[in-house]
Image (tube, rainbow, N blue to C red; front, side, top):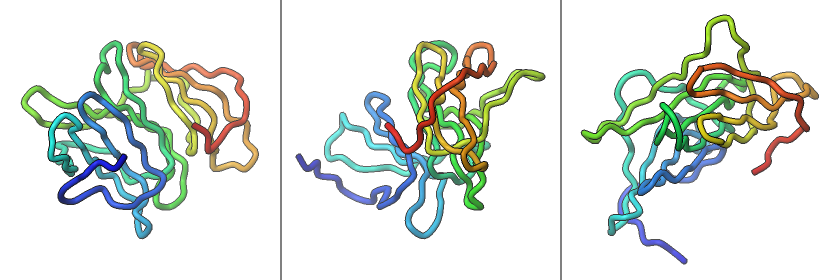
Length: 176
C-alpha cells in the first residue's frame, strides 16, 4: 500500500530510528548519505493529506548520530517520550547518552537529557543495539562498542530512579 504524502519528507537516510507515538510517526537522526543529522521529522497519521513536518525543538538537543536506538516510554515520569540512547557520532565514536523527546500541551516539542544517578554505574557507549521498555525500565540490548570483540552486557535504565544496572548478555548487533 502506498500512502500519498505531500510536501517535503525526511528524505533518504540510514542509521536512523522511527517510532509511533499516537498519532505521530517520529523519525530521528541517521545519515542522509552525505552527513549525519540530528533532526526530528513528524507525520500525523490521523490527518490527511499526509505531510511530514520538521520539528523545531527548543533548548538543548542530542548531537548528530547514527545507529542509535529509540523506544516509546509508556509508564512513569517519561510517559509519552521518545527515548533515544547511544549511537555513533560523526567521528565514529560510540556514545552513552540518553535523551527524551516530549510534546507539550501547547504544541511545543523539546528534548530532555536523562539524568544518571551520581556515583552510580554508567552504561557502555554503544551503537547498533536495540532498546525496549518494560514499564519504566529501558532495556538496552546488544550492540557494538569502540573496542572490537568487547562483550556487551544487557543494561537497564530505570527512568524513575535514574539508575543503571548491568547483566550478562549474549552478543547481538544489527538486530531488531
